[in-house]
Length: 171
Image (cartoon, rainbow, N blue to C red; front, side, top):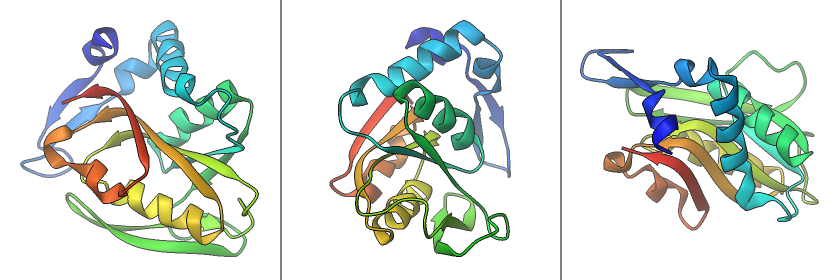
């Protein structure tokens, strides 16, 4: 995990003063390390009966789609308002620096699905908790949430209650 951490850079005062943004784009530029990262995200869930990976907009699309491919399952994008063309479930939630809303097509998953939620980073847990709520509204079983980075000092995993959390790098 040290190699992954070495490819994450800090961007101070982004997106607003006082926030230190963890930029994973250097990791995305290293094909071999990105492959190792995806393998490490997916490994605990091989053989767990996962039927779909849900990825949160936007960086969760990258890591989630690759994790879905590694697990040979469907990928479901969780989007910002106005981006999905069919009927959606939606959840509004708080971020560490504002608020947002996530949407998921109402037919994206069902009670027959066991899902893994994937994002690049968990901070306060608002986005992940909203994603769990979206999956559960559709009847899906949430097996776990997986993140490349966890900001432990913000205690975001508490927002997920009893949902299993798998994180590769901790700050």
